[in-house]
Amino acid sequence: MRKSLPGIILFTILSVSLHAQQTEDKIYHYSSMDAMRNGVYTGDITVKELKQKGDFGLGTYNFLDGELIALDGNIYRIATNGSVELANEKRKVPFGSFTFFRKDKSLTLEQIKTVEDLLQKLPEILPSRNRFYAIKIEATFSSLTLGGAVKVDEEDTTGIAAFMKTRPLYKKQNIKGTLVGFYNPGYAGGLDLSPFHFHFLSEDKTAGGHLLDGTFSETKITVQLDEKNVYEIILPNTNDAGYQRTWTSSEAKAQY
Image (cartoon, rainbow, N blue to C red; front, side, top):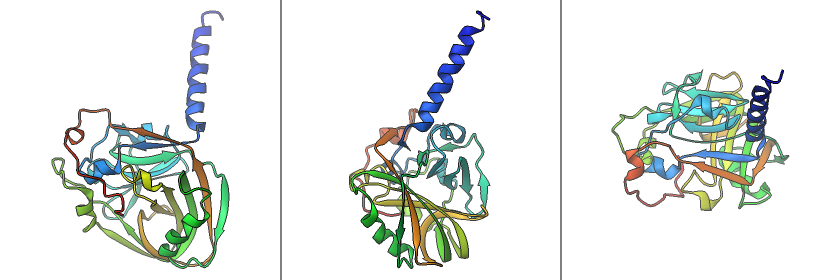
């Protein structure tokens, strides 16, 4: 019995550490949008590791090889052709935001007909426009336009704005699913899109992508908010040439 005690203690410490990591109310943000704007498309964190950082989130994969959506503990990849798959745990990610979603409050917006209406009205219901929020919205759309990503050459350093002009578009009709997103204050525009960054995953897990445009089937929308007071920024732990280059200034107003 005495010989097994250190093992028990070690197991307990690891369990407590993992539990603390999972329950800490924060956003884990990997790399930055400015890195993407300057053509940095590689990271060293894997899908398996990201599952320890959150059960809710969004991002992309190395070399823009698909859009990423994390929902209910699963991490999905939206391929260039629009198909959806559970991401291989060995895949690596160059950019993303993740958290353990724990709803603080639900609020209702009325007379919301389009995605544009939603993005205009959302700031009005936020408890503070200077804090970070994870946002979950379950909704049905009569029409929806989503954006995808196309894998780039490993040596390509073209900024992401240029690629988004020719990104694949997925147009859907009468589709139900979940918007997974974040509100980022203006001062965080170099880290992520501001004020909002949303991805969508259909209820049947057959469609998804970056939210671009759409019309809701119902004009009353329930918004689930999770306020976050800790924003942890982690940079790739590699000798990445992209981080050695001199970057241009942030395009904080840009939307992709």
